[in-house]
Amino acid sequence: MSAFPGKAVLAREHKWSDIENLPKPDKLVFETWNAIPDTYMNMKTYAFGVLSIFGSTYLCEQIFSSMNYIKSKYRSRLTDDSLQSCLKLKVTSYSPDIEKLCSDVQKQKSH
Figure 1 (spheres, rainbow, N blue to C red):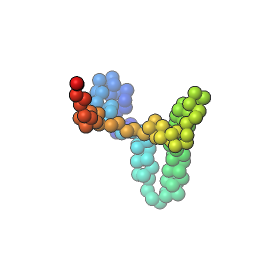
Figure 2 (figure 1 turned 30 degrees about the vertical axis):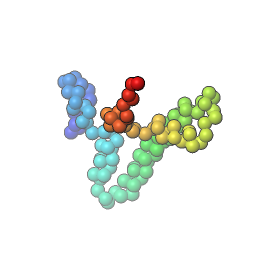
Figure 3 (figure 1 turned 180 degrees about the vertical axis):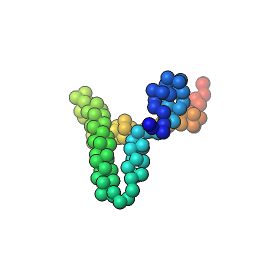
Figure 4 (figure 1 turned 135 degrees about the vertical axis):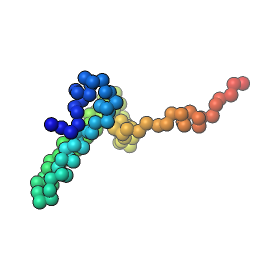
C-alpha cells in the first residue's frame, strides 16, 4: 500500500487542501528509480532516458498545437519573431503582479 492516501480517499473525506499537497506522480516515479541501488546504474540510466522521452514529446505536441492555433489561416502573416513571442506567452506560466502594475500606472487627472 502507498505511503500517501490517494485523491479519492482524500476527496471522500473532504480534505481538499491535502489533495493539493500530494506529491506529483512524476516526482514519485523519479524518486522510486533514484532509490534503486547504484549497482543497477545501467538500468537506472535506461529508465531515465525512456521516461524523459514522454515528457519532451508532450511538450513538443503542446507547442505545435499552440503554434497551429496562433498561426491559423486568419493570422498567416505573422513573422517568425512574432510567432515566437506569442508561443512564449502561450506556453509559459508567467503571471504578473497586478497590484504592482496598477500602482505604477499614473492616475489620469480630469480636466
